[in-house]
Image (cartoon, rainbow, N blue to C red; front, side, top):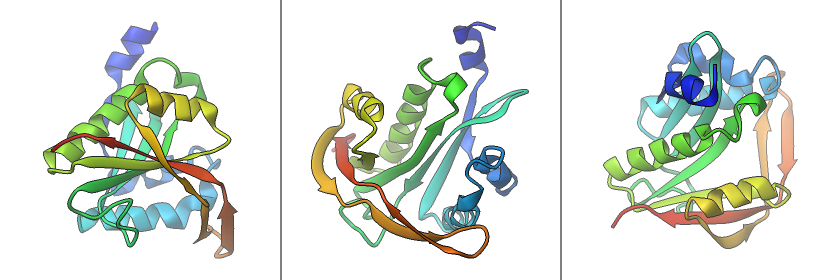
Length: 173
């Protein structure tokens, strides 16, 4: 199947609880199991959205998380700013337009909720992602220390240090 054919078969939809195991990508992201559960639970009360790219016969091939509200109001304030994170496309499906399609879907959804800004953090050591966001109209507005913690699937506290750039794009008025 060529690029146009498989891309037209992809469905972008919000995640269901039954999709949670697939977010782990065959064990690669199992350490985020509890975090994924927490984000899913926040979708139920309208504080977040999980979008997935689903390809028939292949399953989940992309995912993106959107925080609608956060304690860090400069990222997501529940009114004007939504925060994009956990944006992944499986390697064999990259550079074919799927990421662009997913980003457009997220922005369209945020606009429909009357949000004005999309924000995100991109790792300072990921120039390809930075270029992707620049091509889609995002500008770098701040440095982020990239320090956060989570509890992994075994109950252990994990510390992450991934310096990043905060980027944003105006999507509405």
